[in-house]
Length: 366
Image (cartoon, rainbow, N blue to C red; front, side, top):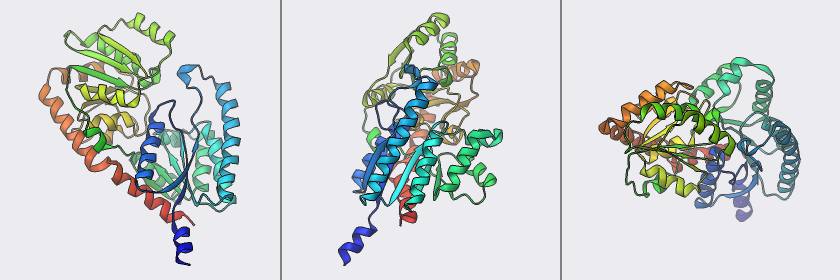
């Protein structure tokens, strides 16, 4: 009898999330969480919701709708199979919003039908803007949150605004985790190098960065590494238009190689127009880098307490000013980097955040 009771008490998690390839913030989060689940001997199954193509690879709106509809049905059918086989007693789904909300609602309704608790993890930082604008997107998300047993958000402002707007919502703020211990083992032979990691597209601020770099860099000892997937035509056009000089366009690299490049850098920069709780900033913090990033999503709280420089989005002059300040002041770079590293270790280390996830799973599973 005790063995049967113990079996019922075990977490049987169904994680619905994207895995690489392609690489990206949420996919990297998934890989981190999977390693933690295995390390902590948590029984889980994974439903991969990764898109086959990204926008930078020509993923049109029609393609997104068609492939998303097929994936939505397949994912729901697979979830039902796993529930009926007794492999699931709690579901944890991540969402990037937009068209994914239709899939989220289908999965939420499925969980309700089979009485399985559902953790709805909102993995982007645009919630405050959605609330302010209202409209169909926000209505869908609000409906999804009401169906969920637990809503998880990754930044403090989203948490505060949801609680104000939907007082009855069961919402928790849990920042993204980073494998601080693993990153701390990477040798840091620092060079006069600035690194950008992200999709090389307008919304990530790549054009403003290259413009700022052209107007800032006068010292041939400094270089800029641009790491991330890109459209060849788009990148060729902006390089020709801006002519930044001393830039190394590396494209998409394996995560391990990206971390080695980042470990060698003196400065990390992310001038994105929109972010949630960016993994690249977390990784740069863990590696003790001086960081420049925009005032979006959770970035201001991440880089508070002198952990980096927060700048206005779509502003090449601010990027240029921050780059100049850090490139000319080694002591300032070291201070920001040391503060960021300590904050990542204290607040965002994987084992700390994992226990908060586990508390959610234990609280709501039946």
